[in-house]
Image 1 (cartoon, helix red, strand yellow):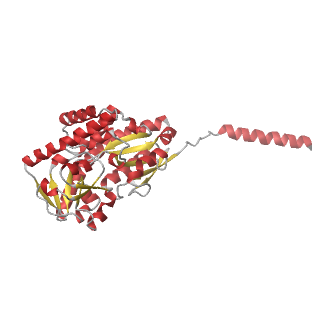
Image 2 (image 1 turned 30 degrees about the vertical axis):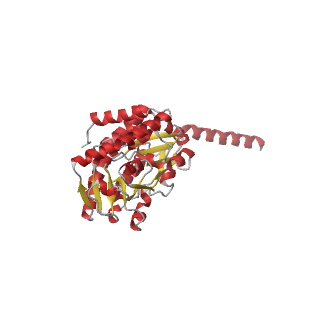
Image 3 (image 1 turned 90 degrees about the horizontal axis):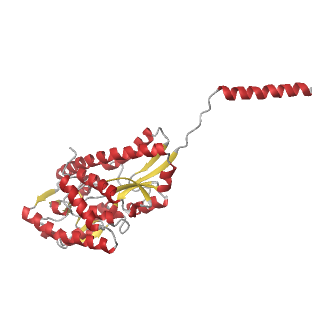
Length: 344
């Protein structure tokens, strides 16, 4: 009986070995799951392109990197997005340089009134600036890419005919653009764009100073009636997309290279989209009764002169921090002069 059992056991073991060696072994690749925080509403064109980036990453990594997208500040408030990514509360975050006040000083050069021509140009410059200076202020995260529209204008609930009529008006803006508002006599109110509609509707503010895409994207054309079309105050919104460093390091080298290639493609897509979004927002606002007021060339020149102290203050502040502010300004001005392209 013992011999029979022994023989049976040997046959069973042999059978298992035979089957194990007769069929290939498929190793299941590790899936990296990430959470992406964005302040743009779900229906916003810029936000939709960000969500498309998530799907493209998943597609081109064959599902090895999956991203859960959270629009409309549902994961983190815009003012906390940068820190949330650095600390791992969110894995990927999209927000403005201005929404991390004091944290990203050198990059604030992008938000100076330097004479931007269009959103494509602004987006390309933001990324070239980062490649050139590699600001240490971003060292605790992994930069994906940057983008941003120009066409920042002053829109109000009260009639405005010139920059002089802005004096004393409470204008919603961000912490960096507040300096521009002050330079033309306005009273800056620094709150996120996501809170602007209610503040304007309740009469707590008299208008806003930010990109014109907010007229449509955040429905601000419903609570403002006038827009002063003075390009001398225009700055770059400077939006960044960053990833938590630890999560980035978990991704395979092959998939990191795939993502970097997608990033380069999205710089082009975002820049071109900004141009379209701005045009559509202006037309949308006009259809909803917003009046655009053109100013004279003389007023544009006078406003440009009023912006010089804002630029000089930035240079002085960076010098005090030991940062190359003058070099950053010169680089940006030179780039804008040599690259007037619109991406169209």
